[in-house]
Length: 269
Length: 283
Image (tube, rainbow over all chains, first blue to last red):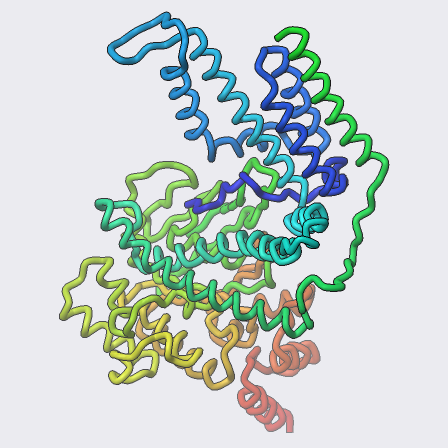
């Protein structure tokens, strides 16, 4: 029996690939740039650019495309619903009508563009989390937001909260799995019966899980205090970020791609 | 009966990890079998196959003639019936407690199997007695008990179904000497009453002093399966790192090498008695 075992979305896959070694700040900024580009794309050859970029990035991260595409499953429903809605409700000349439903040429176009756009969004975002350890990611974000500290923005606290939250996801998945199995061994029946019965049958899993969560939070607080954690003031890093030339070049490349997309839009559009 | 069992977590993903590779063994009714091996050797994964919580990736597991279908296959085989016969006490079982009273906690499993309330009550009391707690515990909140008491309640909550096979994953982990002795006498009693015991443990002294058969696991492979004597001799001849034969037993092994007729035992008293006998025989 497999419980919660196939969580490929948002999971970090350790490796020492080119993409993994890039500075997290570059990856976050690069992702923002790329996503801007993806939002500007609309014609088939635009998509070719961004899809190629995705494949190249996947190569550079040394993850199989199969593994990457599996991560889309979690949001597949969302993508399908969005494109179906677009298909029927976009304005334009109807080419097919059935009752109150009508499909227009614009609708079809919008539907597949939307689907592609969402899929690319998810895949690129997933490449970021897959190639950046949660620790590096939140440190990177902290650094990116640190100029805002002057106006009272709690960059360090937010980053710390994010790190802790991310850090505990796998732990909680593991604990849930273990408790689920323990209750199954005591004869729990989780997949039969009506809605109410099923919801109720999860109480034996949720209660112990909450107990464990509070316990771990307590333990963590004590462990942090024992190591004299006093917030971000004057904290140094064990592994300071090093900005390399590749980082600059990567960002320039992303910016150039956007510029290219913009020019294409002018000339063609 | 387990034949050529393999279990692979996250198969065909970047996180693929083989936990068991070609393990075969059979467990006799009424016997005491121990799985030894260090952390990550696949002991717990193997244990979870014994009541079909996990299903084999390859190979086969059959429990009293019921074949457990392979992983990922939809099945009509009633796995819950298998789980009723094979009780499984997980590592740190006290973490599975969730009810407000010990009474309800103990009633959870039998209620799941649809037993009558009066029978549940009788069984709960019996199980509570078996783990050395009295009736006054019935109305207490399990979360207010001490660590050792919690663990005993959790074990009792598995005993309420009166399983024919009882699988325990590291039941002595993290409890003090007195708790350990109490737990062992409980296991001995259950075993004497005819329950088949499968014990997963780091504690080789427990394994060697009680088991009919011992399975040694190393990185998901079985590196030895036999009687306590056989396994002790094997570990003595070719040590597996991290698995140290208990001192008294290795002393006995050395004495045997030197030609003394002593039993392979973990009990110092028995060894001393045998040595005295040997001295009398020689003089």
